[in-house]
Image (cartoon, rainbow, N blue to C red):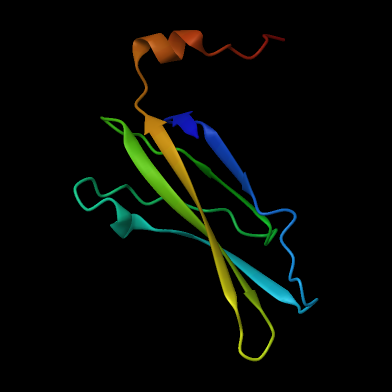
Amino acid sequence: MTATAGDVVHLSGAGSSDPDGDRVSHEWWQYRESEATNRSPQVDLQRGDPLATRFTAPNVSAPTRIHIIFEARDSGKPALFAYRRAIINVRPVTPASTAARPFPPAF
């Protein structure tokens, strides 16, 4: 997935379920240590709906990867976990990318 700095990125875990029918809890978090040579800036993940999150792509001076983890944990004994990772390639804003964005209509 690719975004330009300032874009709102939407992620969804819709469709997650437990094959045994156990109750499942969900959590979104950023995995910052994944880029050892390019520590990604922290993003503010929006909470509320446990199956979805969004964040604004941060301002970056060079292309940067942001890793977001979706964690699902069931209520069985023992509790089982599943993880999915979204990797968002954030591009810096350039004059060309700014020019390509449509302006909102004037009223």
